Length: 439
Ligand code: UDX
Image (tube, rainbow, N blue to C red; front, top):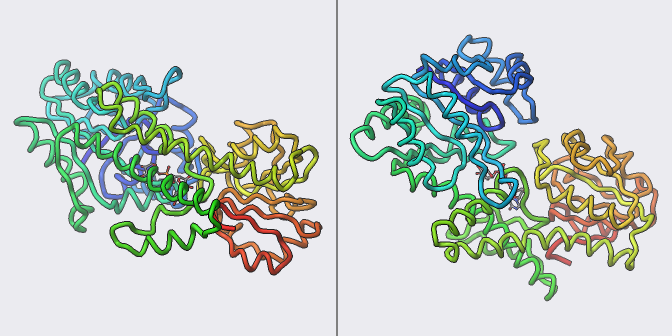
C-alpha cells in the first residue's frame, strides 16, 4: 500500500520505518528540514535500539523516503497523523495545534477514498471533530483512529509485534471500507493472530487514555505501598513479588522506585484529567491527582534520604548521580525523575556529578547548571553518596567492591532509587545501602 506518515518525531519515524519493513511504500513528512535530512541518511535524531537498522533497510529497499513537502503525500491511500500533542502552555490540556495544522496542510492533497488515520494521543472527541471537518472539505475521505502503545526503548518491537491493534472506525457506511484498508496495512500482524479491537472513535481514543492512566496508577500504587513499607520496616520489592504472583495483579509495572516520567505518561494523565473535567466527569478520574502526587513525593523522598544522611546541609557534599534519562535504553530526559532529583540536590548546595550512558547531551540542554561526566568511573571518584536513579544495565551490574574502590571513600552511601541492586552484596562490600520502600 502507499502510505504517508505526517510527523516524524518519535512515533512517526518509528511508524514510517516499520510500515516500510512490512512491505508498504512509505513517505515520512516533517516540517523540520534537519530531521528529514538525518532520517534520509538512515540516522535517528534520538536513541532507539534497532531503529537505525530498520531505517537503513527501508531506505535501501526504495520503499521508504522522507520529505518536508506535504505535497508528497498525494498519491498515498492511507495517511497517518503522528504529530505531537504536548501539554498546553497555560494548563494541563493537550495542545492540539500540531494535529490541526497537519490536517489543514494535508487536506489539499487528499483524494476521495483516502483514509486519514490518527495515531497521536488526543482528547476524547478529537476524531469526531476531525472527521466532520475533513469530510466537509474533501467528500469521500474517511477517518479512523488507531492509537499507538509503543514504549521507548522497545519502539521497533512494539510497532512490528504489538500486543493489540485498536481501530476507532467512523459510524455508518464507511466503517467497512476503513476497516478493510487498515486490515491491509496491518496484514502481517493480523496474520500472526494479534488481537484486534474494532470500535467507535470515542472508545478507541479512550483506550489509549485509560491504558496510560492504568499503568501510571499501577506504578503509584506500588510506590504508595513503598511509603507504607518504609513506615513499618517492610520490603516493597518482596511485597510486589508476592502480590504479582496473583495473575489478576501481575508483576509487571510493579517496580517501586523514584516513579514515572517521560514525554507520555505524566502529560497524558494530566490531559486526561483535564478532558474529563471538560466533559463533566472530573470526579471519575480525580484519583489521577493522587497518582501524580504520590509520583512526585517519591522524588522528594530521595532528596530527603540524602539530606538525612548529610544531617541537614548538602553544601559541599560530593554526590555521584547515576542516570539522567527517565528510563534505561532511551536518551529522553523529558520529565525525568532522575534529573529532577539531581537538580534539587544541586540547588541544595551539593557538589554533584551526573553520568548517563545516552542522556547527557539532552540533560545538559535542560539543566546546564549541572556537572556531567560521561565516564561512570570518573563520576564516582570522591563520591560520599551515590544515587542510582535510572536502572541502566551498566549500573545494575556494578560490582560493589570495585565501585567502592572507585569512590576512594570509607563506607559511602548508595541510594538505590530503582531498587535494582542487591542490598546484602552492597552492604557486605562496605557500603551503606538505602532503597525505596525497603530498609
Ligand atoms: C509509556 C507507555 O508504557 C506506552 O504504552 C505509551 O505508549 C507511552 O508511555 P514510555 O514512556 O516509553 O511508555 O515508558 P514506560 O516504559 O511505560 O515507563 C514509564 C515510566 O515509568 C518510566 O519512568 C519508568 O521508569 C517508570 N516505571 C515503569 C516505574 O517506575 N516502575 C515500573 O514498574 C515501570
